[in-house]
Image (tube, rainbow, N blue to C red):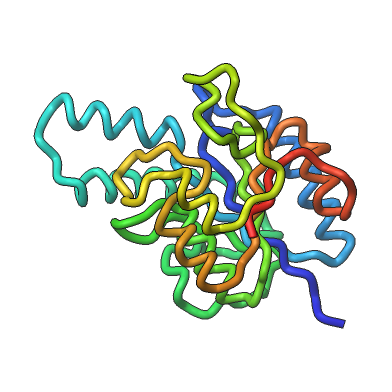
Length: 227
């Protein structure tokens, strides 16, 4: 029987919303470890979130950075978060974070932690590359967003949640181009590749952690499936 590898893109908004969210990380760690005991393996890619965007905004206030400069700053913020997460999982995690998702992955440990790679996209794209590398046809995108909506719910109180949507329809809702610090449920470059590779992505809120547990266990959950 083929081993089950679960790929998760873990948003920086969950790791460091303002301060490090220790309670969420405790719950996340406990859930992942319980699933590892059941024989599952995980590839977890960290985002930068507000931590990243604060540095990008500060840099823009101090100088005139290029888009590539801002992307590199974002990339290194994801690497910091990835190293932090790797240390949280200790000896069950691979000894080094994955910074190049195109290289072969060795599952000497049941948990592999990845980060951003290089300019031009967010860590969502790196998650899709890693999913492709390990042969996974599904990926979980965890953030502080419950669903994909037909418009921005922060600006439109009548925004409607979407539970299932095709990649074609989803890509019509989001910007066509990538820019550093873009705040989108799933970035346009990653979306294009996911559609091309036939990878299904589920967008869900990381809180409560029981929602993620329900999804992993094949039970009812709250979130949006993009297929």
